[in-house]
Amino acid sequence: MNRIDALKAPLFVSWQLTRDCDLCCLHCCTESAPGKRLADELDADEALALADQIVGDDVPYVMLCGGEPLVVPHFLAVAERLGAGGVRLKIETNGQRLDRATVDRLARLPIRSMQISLDADTEDVYQRQRPGGSLAKVHAACRAVREAGLPLEVTFAPTRLNIDHLGLVIERARELGAFRLNTGKLMRIGTAGRLWDRLEPDAAQYQHMFDELERQAANLVGVLELCYVPKSMGDGLRASLAEPPATLLVLPNGWVKVAAALPQICADLRRHTLRQAWQAYGAAWRDEALLDDVRGAADDEARHAAANTWHRMPMAVVHRTEAA
Image (cartoon, rainbow, N blue to C red; front, side):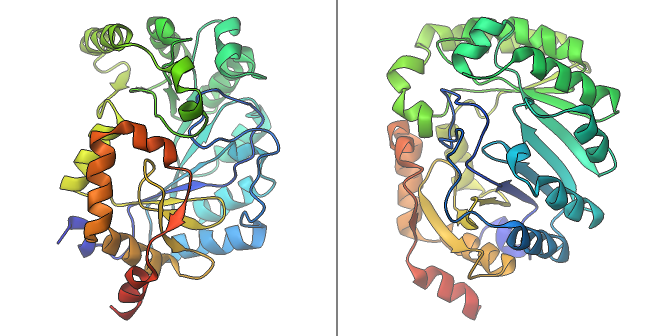
């Protein structure tokens, strides 16, 4: 029996609102880009109904992400519905559309953090990795977040294009008032998986990166938290085998994935309640075929490239949970 089996609901829901985005990032793990909205994404009424279920099941913490969540017309309505129900929120954004008016509305909600991608410290490197983006807009968004009194964390996705900017980005994160910087090895999923030979840092670059993180972390205690463990998705999967995370990963169409690095879908929130989806997720982590796939993906990260070729687990898993 896993720890999650004793919980009536997840402690955290990571909710991808859309596959649409305003950028074409080379490292994108969800393969999001302008015009990539899924044909069957949850509409506003369905999204708000799911938000009501999250509140009703006492889920304490939700991350709204994408794609780019701020391109979704009902993004603020969903955030405000969750916030009004007492759910603490994390908003993951590229920062391109995060203007002061939006920040001011979000500042009225129980925001646990605003997470903004900060993948370089010069416009040319930033735009090579995030075509169509503006680093100046990112910096302005970060400053607006801090001026509104909201907690800021930033992410750094290392590729061959930008890995030498890590030290500069750490210093920039300090200057912008971030409390945390999240990083780790590049995920071999989605667009990054297709461009792997072009993007993957080599072993020497990764060694230098982690040496830099360990050196800087010792000097930044109480100033900026550097989060880089687990270092890779393989390490994360091995940790999940020991203790599955109390997290539901919800896709834009309401499907629920077992893990980001795997293609298995364990529930459909158009057909199942959130509580049934949570029971199905727990059952999935007791399913031997699924556990074999987790072990295989932990040992061979090349398998992560198929993570977005979603397929449903046998319905017997869901049926068992509905009868429980």
